[in-house]
Length: 120
Image: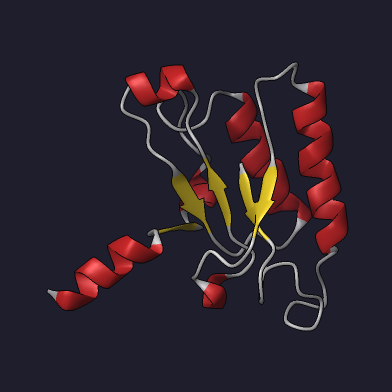
């Protein structure tokens, strides 16, 4: 998982009701407990600032072989969203398992896809 912590994601001024540090700690704890199946890294701004917090779930090698591609999730601002992301990642993530119906509502296009659609 790639967790945006740029200008807007993780920003308590933009989303004051979210415990951004707690979210990151939960994701890292799940990765540590996964025996190497999950990994979490942070990055600077991923781009879709209006949909903060953004988390990208990467497919495993097997998931990629099955057609899985990185999936962008926006508005990951509460424990329920974090629970859904973790449950999906632990079930295999992209290419291996379907996200929950609630999580599907939070899927966003990667910024390059959004720009490509806007040009049409």
